[in-house]
Image 1 (tube, rainbow, N blue to C red):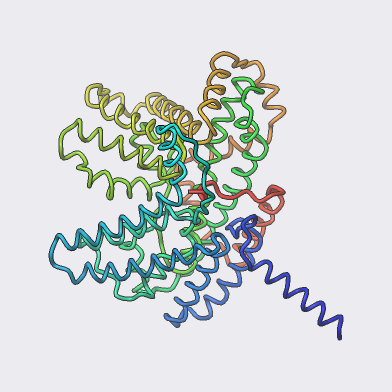
Image 2: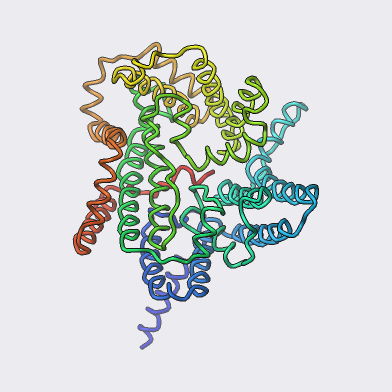
Length: 499
């Protein structure tokens, strides 16, 4: 009896340890703990989905626990933001004077941007100020709340849309808390807007069988992108190149830059796929966050296809308020450039992100300038060789930009560029393919799957949806087994969790 009691105490102790916040082991979509808890969550969700209030309280509780496992006490910030947004939204609905309404919007923006500045940029700004003043600065240990860049943008868009009369204020605190804390997009997007999700929350429609199958298909594809492709490329090749590029030839450095571009796409779009898929299992549909961006034929098209929820957010809540293209060509170019610079800084407190944003801002301005004066004849635009050239050039420009995004410093970028320009050694390609056969295969699969016609992906999804339930379950089990077999020994967090 004593042995049984001791065993139960040990089991309970381990469960408590698993459920307690651990900075070294956050609960992410690709962890075994989350998979087990999510299966239990969905099972209970299906049991209570007919009871709206109970269902919503259950999802909010799970979402807050999920956030606690990734951000500890910062969950209080999220709860405080839910309450402040709800109050400010109701206040906006009652106020008539435009000056007072603008003051409410300003208060929300100052609150959200103030949190971003303190938690993400305080050390960077303080260090820059001290450098100008000729003083030394010891960085403070500021805990960055997980997903703060995403939920602050959702908060701002809600208040601004209410101000613009595009959305009625949410009168239910429960509904708004459900929206802002909803766990699938909470940590790394997509940047879901209140005007897209709040109506779905109010309608309370259950997930259809087709939605559940589509959700499972997206979760499977997301796991494969993340674990089988992105994590494998990262741990076995890309990290080595960027850690010490001088040890490798220019050809290997070029492959490292291309490899990171594929890794980032598979990592981030994999998260988006899983987030959208989990939401579908509960009856909520989000817009696509990626639309085959490497098929783009220009920098402008790339930003219509890459991280769509962020690029459209920046357009609607930053570029257009700055004046958009309504104040002349020069001002439009400036607005475009500064929007991308801010978009770069949104990713984090690093000069490399600022450079990456400025680089893309310059590309967008250059493209818009050139297409005004240099137009191809209509007969040439659709020719396969022209499309292929445009795609290859755009991809090369994107790879260059992501080198700044990934590199820890300009010295690393310079070393990689020097190796590519002066020590390329194409002759090592056969040895590279032989020595890194699985890496080449993973990069190739990532690119080929990305470049296939969208109709193929739709067809594959429809085929899965049409399968009998037994075959759907068997395929899901096979994919999970593949993920477990190929995952790295150490947990590889999603790249965008740091933003």
